[in-house]
Length: 318
Image (tube, rainbow, N blue to C red; front, side):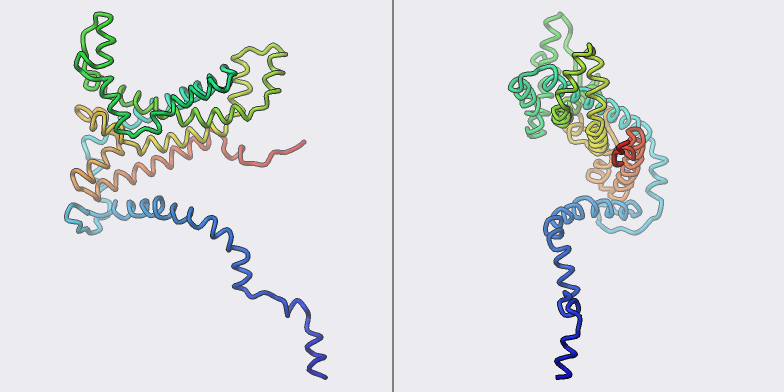
């Protein structure tokens, strides 16, 4: 009787208390299942390559696949590289001009197809046509540009010049950076167009109606209502396109392979050439690591310009 009475006096919470492992599975089981594949992909394809680049940047790894740690030797070599100054200038020119074209053209297309053109069917057709290069293979897209810039009389550009009695030109040799910016800018605008279009459609229509009743001009509606409303998407697209352009080189490689006298050689392409053509894996990784640092600095600058800390704060109701 004494043992039964003692067992009855044991608190119920102690008897039903779950085991630590069961509690852990109950709390983190579903998040692990949902986020596990995503975290695995991030680790394998994003974090691991960055870690590998950091390690290789401080080695002398070459085609023999044998390497030793050499400290800052690759970075000292980079400082004395006679081509690096021009390559960095090419990178700034390419990224700056292409980013400006991407954002301006993408926002213009979004305004055209969602605000100025009220018929959704027409806007959808325009956006679909503009998205075709994005869903096409890069080689096919570049082949169209090579046909457009063909130096012979059968090239599209030279055919247009012939209509005005202008002589044929080899545009890819005379203006390689312009060709690269156009090819990347026109296809990159499609991404911003989709994001901006969705953001503009989410703006309540009552705001536009009230502005028109008050006699607001089109310019005022765009710069005082639409632009502030799409500030978050504008920051996102700007940062995304910036980071994408800093590391992109496929269209440059297919169009010009760096161009005559490295006129279109950017840092991402230079890292590729050093690693996979010259087989200087250590030096190529050092160039890539510098590019990663530049990307982080640019991200922080744009973070401050757009006031990201203010946008993520909870709104206050006075």
